[in-house]
Image (cartoon, rainbow, N blue to C red; front, side):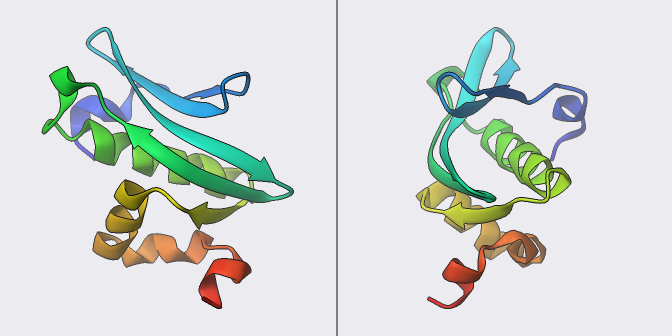
Length: 102
């Protein structure tokens, strides 16, 4: 994650079931659902104005840190998150057992 995003807070918008990261007045988000201790990441969206600036990577990383700190497991359905995990396999430690079997 780029240094400029490290201090930005990740917002867990439970009402809309999405994690949000505000950058330069724009909001990137990851939609999720929770099932017990599993967090199912469904869709990542980064505003056009922020594309190519590392915001997508920052929100995924912050979301994974949140999942880990809450002792939850990950079910990645979002193609962007899946691609991130392929580039950063150390985060696979968060994968739910149901995902590991597939």
